[in-house]
Image (cartoon, rainbow, N blue to C red; front, side, top):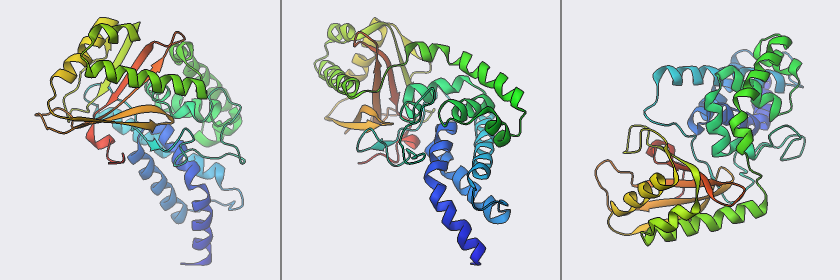
Length: 312
């Protein structure tokens, strides 16, 4: 390895965590983020940036454009059923494995802080944006880039960046209207709600489950066409309660429920001991609560390819 290669490797390692966190937010996929970071490293070795003292802008430009290409290919291929981001497990809300520190801090003063920007609700909301809108919104409202810096990173004019940013924010209106704070109190409230939900499910108490749910509750399950999952979101208190009750009744044998922190938020990992056809043997369940403490959004990831990184 030449001295230049050694230097490239050194600063790339310094920026790897940041690049991974950015790429994960753009793609919503841990595997795709790995590929984007690796491809960025290869391009750096083949065509190193001119300014090795300040490589961050060059690295961001390569990584974001690579991630946008990944998104475009994924959308052309299509996806069976609702899509949810890969769940990332951590020991606590900091999600150290992919939470990049910026200037020594873990959050920024942007519209969305770093923890919120890896939540299931936020990443799923980004699916309504084009790849370019997603990149512009993340760079501007999460990583605090100026319009000029975003324009340089994406090869756009500053005027176009501002237009794209405005449209992206407009597309996030529904999310912004429902967004909840990620305080310690909110985390504890969600943990209690999930445990109560599981207890009622174990008792087959459909009425009790309904009382926990918002009137417009929405449950989304991602099986990726590999395991059985609902093809469309389930909406409404009674329908969601009946769905989960039927799910539990259809499974025989012990079920292990393990509390976990997924994408920085409380969640439950469920393992079913007895296989049943194409039903998932493992799934991750988490939820968002409304201002009244009711479960307003329920997320279920059952696609086994997305659960490989979870602890056994």
